Amino acid sequence: MAKNKPVVTEYRNYYLPPSFPVFMLTGDHWRISDVISPRLHFHNCLEIGICHADDGFMTFYGHKTPFREGDVTVVPRNVPHTTYSAEGKASLWSYLMIDPKDLFRDMLPATWRNYDLLSYGFKDFKYILNREQYPNVYQLAMMIIDEMKAQRSGYQLVVRGLLFSLYVEIYRIESEETPDSFGRNASAPPYPTGIMPALDYIENNYMQQFSIGDLAEMCHWSPTHFRRIFHEMMGISPLDYLNNTRIMKSCTLLCGSSKSILEISGLVGFQSVSSYNRHFSEIMQVSPREYRKHSAEENEFAENLSVLQYSGWMYPE
Image (cartoon, rainbow, N blue to C red; front, top):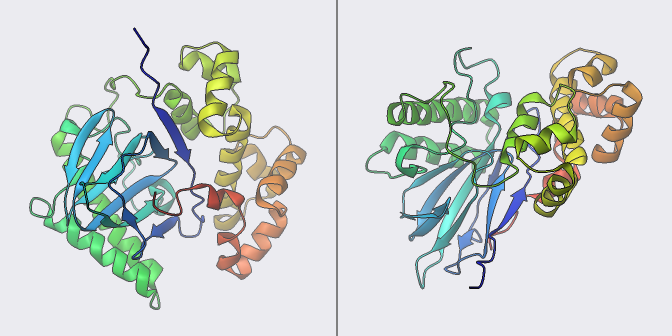
């Protein structure tokens, strides 16, 4: 009997500026075709989508779920999925990519630990929220899209407030759907993609010291097999991904604190400031000192530095 071909899963990394960790994909060209992609994809951030026209399907963990005009989709970080329109249609979308931890750093109660929402999904795979059942979610999402498009004076403050309200609405929906597991140490279902435990561990423990062997053990693989699978899926080695994560986290501290570069290098997990400076310059194309100086002078500078900004899904398939 012939073996089934493994599903290819693609990682899409969006660089979200620390000063305003929100990125929008929108416009008339954002139409999703009716061709089913042969691969799933997942992001490094929370994705909120708004379907403006037509209908189709999304696939999560092998489950096909229909969507229609007016639906708002909520896809947590590291959840493999794909979207395609109904036959003969081309659904129109807008997408918001956000980092809740940085965006709501001083706004959420300390008891709300799970910033990224459940990484293994809502009850009954409720990633898709329809307009009739959740009108507040739809209205808030549309207000955010309008503000992001118009960019009137103070729009970032308005968008942050609206996104906070939207996030709370989603938090309520999720906690009501899964009261026994949300925000607690409940056991999660098995991860759909083998490297997910390592990705989650890096996101939550990047400031600590651990080995590639430790990450491989979390995924129940040998270090050699883990490195190979990780590179096939992510396009970079586990160590490079870890260093990229540390550098991205350090950008927030450079922009939002008065801590020294030496302090920041240690806080994000580098064992020497020279190693930190070298990796920062390689990834961001400037030194940490230059990044901090220019970011203070002009936020736009920070938004256009990293090559990682362009490794996400910038155009519809």
